[in-house]
Image 1 (tube, helix red, strand yellow):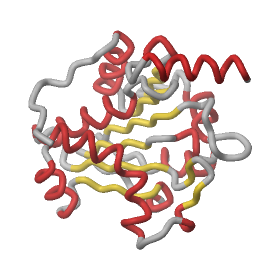
Image 2 (cartoon, helix red, strand yellow; image 1 turned 90 degrees about the horizontal axis):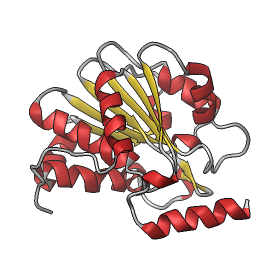
Image 3 (cartoon, helix red, strand yellow; image 1 turned 60 degrees about the horizontal axis):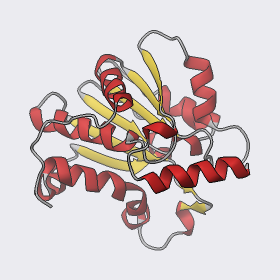
Image 4 (cartoon, helix red, strand yellow; image 1 turned 90 degrees about the vertical axis):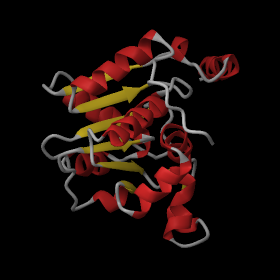
Length: 213
């Protein structure tokens, strides 16, 4: 994949507001349906910040429970098991940085990808851009653990769709939004179906499922 050197531009007014929120807040929640560009915008912004030297490290994480599968049930060693969760990030990073730069930064710890459980005991230091994706699959305890890792001068983005949780019981994303709404330094940005850019079909599919519900 050839590196895309063009400046990151929003495709919709909602994406523009989301990018501005990330720039101006320590902690930003991006919530809404699939296909709105939440993960792409956050990851592309992190990649561009790394390339320009504005940050020193990117941390990418997801809960290791999705669509009924658990990390321990997947074949392979730890890196192979988690690759299924990091692949969406990898495609965006390749686009914004180039494949060679991504592999170099992964080897040297400037891009770190790990299951959410591996964040326990760590502190997100200065000059770090952290993205938690699929956050609707966190428990309340997991979300609290993650949010209490935030150190000074780091940028944290939490993305997910509160209506698509694959875990039983309350999810940490919905709980955190209610607890942290209005807190200084925190922005909660909501996308809706009209903001879907992936395809018109995705929007139609979501509409049908919500009608069925």
